[in-house]
Amino acid sequence: MQTDELAEHLFGSVLGALDVLTVAVGAHFGLYDLLHREPRTAAEAAAASGMAPRYAREWLEQQCVAGLVDVDDPALPPEQRTYAVSDAHAAVLCDPDSLAFTTPLAQIVAAAGVQLPRLLEAYAGGGGLRWHEYGELMSPRTGRRQPAPVPGAPRHRVAARADPGARRPRRGRAGR
Image 1 (cartoon, helix red, strand yellow):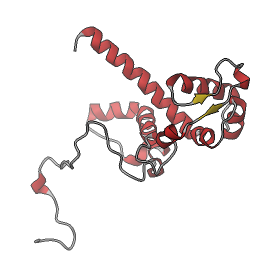
Image 2: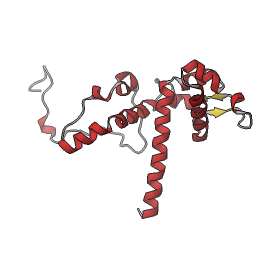
Image 3: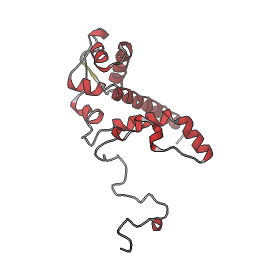
Image 4: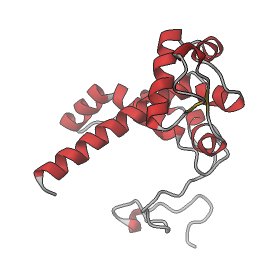
């Protein structure tokens, strides 16, 4: 990869990371569910979610620019615009039974960001963080109910252990 290609790649990654963080915000306030059930104005979304009205309006505008949320008529004054989440996007953003549901991944990125100072300490000292230390964003309730295929990932399981022979036998299965 040449200099310009790398710079463009990283810039795109930064924009993607920011989009992912806004997905974590939307999930926290339940905005995707609200907007999928019923189109709402920014004021209605703010009132129903508990988000400050100004931030709800800005979040909704950003979500439209990112292509995650639909707006009925962008030419209307901001206070009259109605926002919605399509069925196709709801599968990704707010349906935990969908194989496409990836909102928990956004919450995992947010949790890792919150713990970056401790992760840097772990990298320097060889330590680590336990799952629960990442906080509520990494809660088991955050996760998906079904595994989703990851584009480009191999379709078979790969042993994660460095030494497969070091596995401990399962209780009651020794000697088999």
